Length: 460
Image 1 (cartoon, helix red, strand yellow):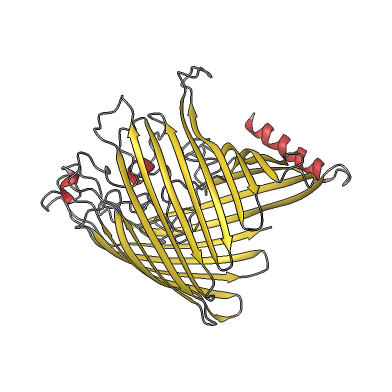
Image 2 (image 1 turned 90 degrees about the horizontal axis):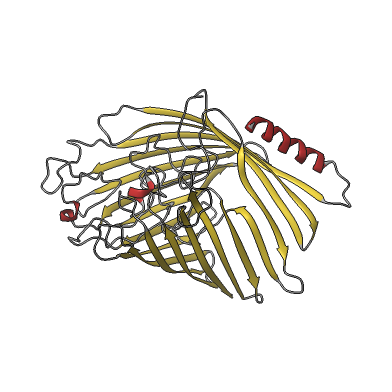
């Protein structure tokens, strides 16, 4: 049935594309991505791993007028040759259009854009990309999801300087056989209000957000550990306030900074006493030259100080992300980073601090660019907060855990729409083990981690 549905949708898109231009204008877009990586995690019990993925996205924009249009896209992603991969399949906090039992295409985006008559207010309804903004380190550690969510967004441009946007997103819904009975459904909903003020060489972007999350909506996703949500996956209500700033008046010198504060209140069915609350601050300075763009970045996230439970003084997050590095943290490639297994992929920098020195856009030959980076990171959590839980350092970093990472990236633009990427990441660990005081339950030993990735991408 799913195959027939997919074929029917594809046929409809083809027929629509051949329809008279007077009825609707159709513009196709999409991409083919082939990703290969080979890596060794910090877990000494595991050897090197390799993975190969293919992802295909095909979309179409249907434009009736300047005031009304629609967009529809299918996406399929699968592990090459593995027809028994049972991970992410379907919509929810663990992913959209993930690795199903066989290669298939799922609805990736499906929305309409329309202007409220007589106003500049733009409404977008349907499955779309919705996340909180971030300027310095690319991705927002409070709420950033690579998969679109079902929701409604509104954008109002007041004038050339000021605009405001708001959205609601349903990131997950499980009815467990109870249909649409409100009191039985288990959901995760997020709301955001974002303002943008642009001046000559300066921009501010303040925002507030709220998430209502029922227990078990995280499922078995590792996000629970890596986004400051305790493993019981308890029901909660979370508020965030953030602001991003960008200074470009001294171009080619660019300065970016972000601050986020979050507070999570646990509901009555949880064992935690006291809310989870914390903050993160990050910034980056870059200077563009004919030989490349050097960058100095730094971040700091509040940490636990012998709290009543882990993560209590970490900034709470809901599927947050960070683009600090390609190894220990989330990167910028198809699979977040080049670490094949989930060991070592830390989704958010809450509860850590660090610095990054990088040089991007290095080029000696036409259409060939390189990037290098050195990253140092350390935890801000008191080791006593571990309380013998055995939580691994990529899930919970203490003041006694640290690492140094070296990244090297290369991009070759083969044709206008075809590019090849190569990435190498090496992480030197200094993690406390089971044998150290206050770290009972951790592994007896950790190794340095490394990853090598290659990607071919055709985008149209």
